[in-house]
Length: 256
Length: 326
Ligand SMILES: Cc1cc2nc3c(=O)[nH]c(=O)nc-3n(C[C@H](O)[C@H](O)[C@H](O)COP(=O)(O)OP(=O)(O)OC[C@H]3O[C@@H](n4cnc5c(N)ncnc54)[C@H](O)[C@@H]3O)c2cc1C
Image 1 (tube, rainbow over the protein chains, first blue to last red):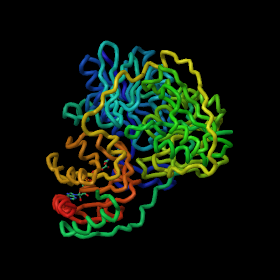
Image 2 (image 1 turned 180 degrees about the horizontal axis):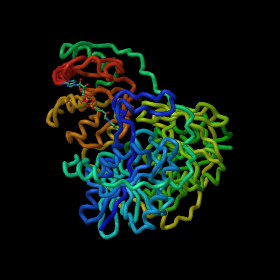
Image 3 (image 1 turned 60 degrees about the vertical axis):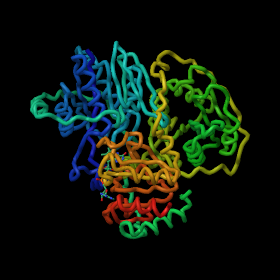
């Protein structure tokens, strides 16, 4: 039985235009909406697969205010069994603080009888892109960690983690309990079923205190990069532009 | 007060390993930090650094290059590599630790930051002010810049790819090589690569190192419709890169994806065909020298951000272009 904890983050959906709040200190997702980081959708998919093979359970955890319940329920709808929210103002928490709060939650849950053979997180969050929460968490929990996992499988108390490199795949084998941070691309997240959605509505969300005084990440301000002035030279329309396009490629020196 | 740079190497063709382009960018960035010297630490090579690495270090003004020849480090283990970096920190007494914003760079630096419980800023693009240190870094896939203060005894930061152009130092040095000894524990080696499987087709190093990339997006219309784009990549001696929609639809493998959650590329030419140019895609191709968009929509962001554009159906434009090129 492999029990997996998956940490997910509520992030502004930035696939369209990015707008800052009036104070200019955070991204305003009120119009575009919020979502779960893409890497974490894959982490969740991996967790549901691993737990499903061994009758284990998936617990999903998010640090944030009341509204991140939306992402927790979305996770339950695709197969997580239980959901935990660490009640905190996510923006006030730097990556070290988030790791410490998750570590404190893991200890609290494990003291109460739970045990997480594997903790999965996204490699980096879609908004802050810090690349360190999973690794800091592993240090705090004194567990081995691999970053950038595309797939994770578990057999005989060990996890096999596969990660991509420029030229191929690197394979790790870790003793459990362990931590891995997941990159999008190794698995295809599933869609919620109707029964999953029903279950998600009814699943209670456990609320924990962060147990950490946040130090923040040192943010002094944000600015959205202005769009570059369009300097585009339109070479033409359709196939009629091919001759001019070929000429430009020759001028650029890229035609061999 | 000095700066320590974690440098990565790469083997180009059959030659000796040399510093990666990212390492040279990072050394260039490091020289802009306050401090009286730049030292470097090289991890993962069993044996002493190649003559080429040393020449590059001299060129970049590196005072001391810390290396470890421990055979246990041959296969990658982020935490063990971080121990070597830590030994380099002790040797140099650096106040700043900088590395490339690569998967290895970010992972190893995060371990070092964890050892010391100090902050780490990933994907820094520029220094705003030196005293106290303030930097700007990319967040939200590069759409937003975050200004943060990095005070304290040790500041750890990774530098986003192509944030600075690599330039040699005005004052080359005689680089000293210093071997560091590390006591690795089983915990340091618990997460170590067991084996590597080399991909037969579609080597991503071909994509990230290509001088021409033919980008293909959802506009291609199907997994079986890549023939012209592939033929053009072949004709130009380049590689095919794709958008995330293309990989999520299963039309092409993930290692071909360009963008925030894919590869970052910087070819001489990026020819983006049927790609809208969403910010997360842009994050991966923005540092291409020239961008040409082929798109049916003259208002697609990729068109307005490109230097050149052809408005039209890629399935008409690419075959006609191939014919022109002969
Ligand atoms: C957290 C996160 C991470 C992401 N990471 C990445 C990433 O790494 N890489 C990435 O690419 N995206 C990424 N995305 C997705 C990104 O937001 C866009 O959805 C994606 O890039 C769009 O792909 P596309 O341009 O191929 O498709 P679309 O947006 O659908 O655009 C298709 C384009 O093709 C044009 N077109 C249609 N038919 C033709 C034709 N016959 N000939 C020529 N043009 C035609 C259309 O006008 C349109 O401009 C990420 C998103 C999120 C939220």
